[in-house]
Image (cartoon, rainbow, N blue to C red; front, side, top):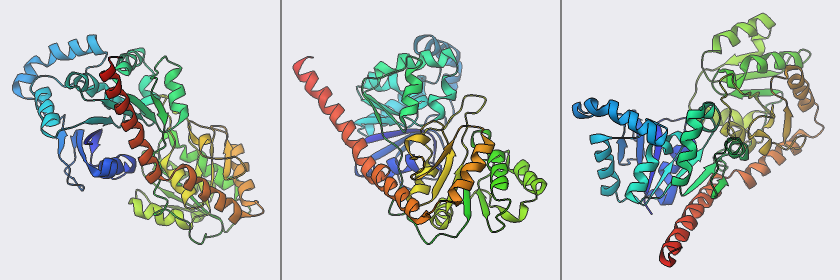
Length: 387
């Protein structure tokens, strides 16, 4: 089976879950449809970039098509004109059997064309596309129109499906399949005592300032505790400044953005993983953070929040600790409780076992393939019986 993986940007090294599908889904028999191509094609895939620029003719007809698509489909994202013709040829020339749109917003753009070509299309909801993206009724209406066009829906967490369902955006063939982690590549090593790690963009949704204040409070009487931050973003400089203000600059290291292998190496030897995820003011939420799945695979004890799909991963008191969003004092208390666990290796081992049982991405990839194949087989059987 030949699958087209539809994504916004290609290639982005941080999108490990999408890149794994591109490289391995159906034995790697894949092509890529992207919004923008960034000049790096490490898997040697045939690709089509939808936003490579409009032809002169398409520029002229764009106003009419954008309005028509908005009125008919609830979105102006759909390809049209010569760009649509070129994408149609790409699907046919590449003998594409199925399309997996890696975000709901990508499915919006491709579902009508997929239906017209008779190519089954599935989508994967991962976070922003099922939270921030549906704050407007216009977008919610577009999703409702899209759902009947899809062969099936996947989500990294039950939370996201429930969030969509709250707005009447549902599909009868929906499944929760986390992005997962390579549990053979991410594995525990000897842990550095009192080592803490936070990974992610320095943005509102990750609440790095709250993380730092809670760490400072919890470790005020623990001089050997160390916190490493990996990531960059608009809140990096304010967080650095806060470390100085709180007098913990010697206990905190800021590494900036780092390659994925560097993150893995750090996780392997880290004892505690911190992620104070919150819902941003614009409604943006997590799905089920890959970083938490990777931390658990490395045997880290995670201190996080009751946010989005995170409680679907962390068993409170067994593999980690959870507090409410924005509860800085509670987060500090949870850090203190984590450091005081009687048998830290046992909790670490439990976290690793959960990662092996729930988040092994090799197993999850096979489940995804099976769900797609079962759906297509059911459609074929129904077409033969006329039901």
